[in-house]
Image (cartoon, rainbow, N blue to C red; front, side, top):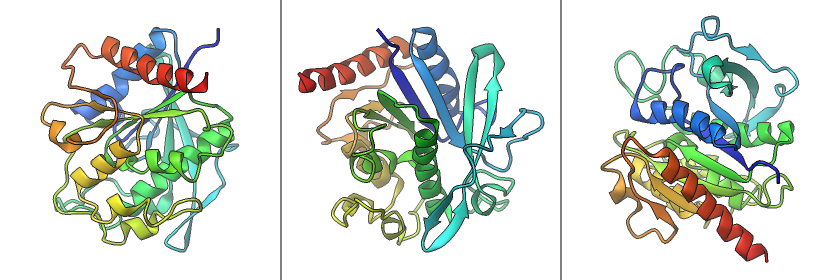
Length: 270
């Protein structure tokens, strides 16, 4: 029996970014799930503050070179990779000079949220899915972490639903308290439009506050995990299988939840 394949899409991963609850999960969860016998791939944004030399990032030429059009502008997609040696774990990075060269994550030196964080999120989500297609690696389950991944479940259920690589993929979203004040650019939903996506599909993204983005992602997912204490309210009333916050010992519970979601797919296929 072949190993189940789990794709992790994380907004933050240590040691590439400073420790946080989200970043620590992004680092430790894939390793532990890999040690349980599953095959994994992991993606994150290549924020400009990540030291490429120290972390030994290098560009993957065969995966780079595609252009993604966002708001009628072309943006080259650059893919880099590095290894976390103790974990025997590779991390793929989505990079672009327009969006990810500044020496910061989401805010400028004055603490102001970048105006183009909406486009950065769109580019990241589309970049991951296009890169996985190029890899030719069909995931059984995709686990999204952080609000920047919020479009992934929507895209998988619409634009990418007929892609052979993703047609059997299930998607799980973890919700966190990685909040930002206010909302993204008011044209976020319009910019996120792709072939196969309707205006109705994007209705929950029209008012792009943090909680609305996470709730919209959850509503398009096959399962939702409360990744951090206090984030429960984000997914109230969303009718998909849910796993509540698991504190420190979460790996076994997450693995069991994956199996539950994948088992539902197996039952539906019979």
